[in-house]
Image (cartoon, rainbow, N blue to C red; front, side, top):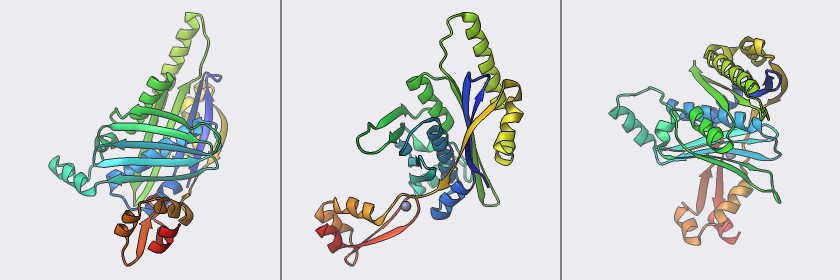
Length: 296
Ligand SMILES: [Zn+2]
């Protein structure tokens, strides 16, 4: 099992990249929350995308990737802490998804997430704690899959040429997911000949990346994958980082949220004088006495 993000450079630092594989993290997410396969596949892609994007940034704190839409899959969230803790979840209307699949006779088929999300946005934030600015990026959800939606962000907002692929597979009830991203580094080339060479190298690297097969990235050592793909492009590994599943929920945090609600809402929600809430990320069940929430 592998849960790692490897950072690398290509063509003498003209381009940088990240390659990620998540095995334990994905299966732990699904051990805590059960999803139908099409939603699970979207959650797995979101998680890989979250780790890839977080891996591009220098931050101390929390990175969050969120996609929300008006479709039957209304929310996909992944958050990643700077010490490698990852969690993800989805909100969806199971009945609406089932009905749509029956209508379009696509039962059991896994369709790309944007189809289920509908119209909406992809947002990511970097929260580095008190007294720091919240960094935020946002783009409309447009594209045939999540990778395309994320690429639109880099193209429109950051104007950085980026290429990206995500891979998800379920076999014998085990999920595996991976992704790879390459990006042009800023250069200040003035002459057009150099610029043309750069473009040529970039196109070659993109074609090589597209030649990567799912079976390779899901089975081989990540360093081996990189060497196979880019050995003629001076691939150099510059670091790696391990990731693990971890939830940041706590009874205190939930107590704070719930006790901020209106008194009527608290009493409406209560059953036999108690409110029970389940964490969407890890499935932990918390139970509170109504009296405890009201006096808080
Ligand atoms: Zn939790």
